[in-house]
Amino acid sequence: MTGARPPVPVWRCRAVWTVVAATALWRVALAARTPLPSEDGVSYLWMAQRLADGEFAAGLAEVFPPGLSLLLAPWLRLGGDPVATAQAFGIACAAATVLPLAAIARRLAPDGWLAAVWLWPFGSLLARNAVEVFSEPPFLLAMALGTAAGLRGRWVLVGVAAGAAFWIRPEGLLLTAAFAAAHRRAALPALAPTVAGPALLALARWSAGHGFDPLPLLAFHDLRDDLPQRGAVVANLLQVPGAWLEAFGLAGLLGLAAWRRRREPVVQALGGFCLLQIAVVCTFVVRRRFFLSAAVPVHALAAEALAALAPRWRIGVVAGLAAIGAATGWRGTIDAGKAAEREVGRWLASQLRAEQTLVGDLARVCWYAGRQPPPPRRLPPADLLASAAPAAVRFVVLGDRRPGFGELERGLAPGFDRASLPDELAALAAARGIAVFVRR
Image (cartoon, one colour):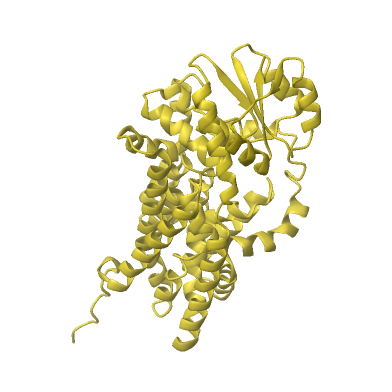
């Protein structure tokens, strides 16, 4: 008697490639509506530009993990617009993630996997994230590949994926932790390559003169006084449901419901990753974007919940969730008015000589002016005034709606005047709340 034929690999399913195309095309449409990168995005681009120019020490000097910038650097080296290049890279990673995600979902729910995969293209925050130059697209691709390896018991590959993902986002280590908690001793071979990821990053930073520290972001956050809710675990827990829904919509609830119904190790590893991600976020501050690191297990677990529905209901639920995600994603792109930051930055670039620089609290303006973006924190007025003291600082650029602006304006008065911008640019800057000061 002949046994059942093995299922066709997901990469040979036309329906999966349709999802891949939808993922890419929808993000291309959102990219056309996105006037400029996120504030974190310009820091990643600054690092990538330094690395592309061979300035290894400068590229590793920022507090952000360098993985995304290292991946972008070869493409920036080829020339072209850095924002468009980074958007194309994010779109490609998001589209490529569909293939391992489909394999994972089919393993969990042979009847609901394709429906769950169709939630991926139109996740509101996920889709915008790829075109705003955040680090999640390549991180989630690594997570999907590592998770697919874990479902096949390929523990060394799990560790390699986790260790490599750490270079992009530190939550990469949670992949091995989740599988180790579910499979215990069987997953031990994943530990060595997982640990190698942070160790190699620490070695790379040490060789560049920055100390043997794989994650300077932790020390940076320890010095911050602009996040009063940091580490308030109980208060942060109360914010988790709302932020979780904002990150994933109702798809996030589908995944958690499926995890509670099934107890086998594979499902528990995926659910465990979600719990670990929530725990990590609660020890810092709750932001909806931070939960996106759990997007792969959330969508894979949703397949189990969708499989429990009748086919007609399944199609209706997925179509409804996709429509909601598409609508909120379309409306939620970066405000077109923020393009003023790009225009002010480009004008400043035309005014600055090579030996001159600028300081301020507007990262995108600084980057478009060709200068290093400020660290991802709100500096107190005294620190900003101190940074403006060196003679090489010609311009100071501030948001005039930030707390303490009046104090900053008074502190700059002895040495700086309000810059006279071209009329059209002055109107854009005023509408956006951008104040430019020039040294006398």
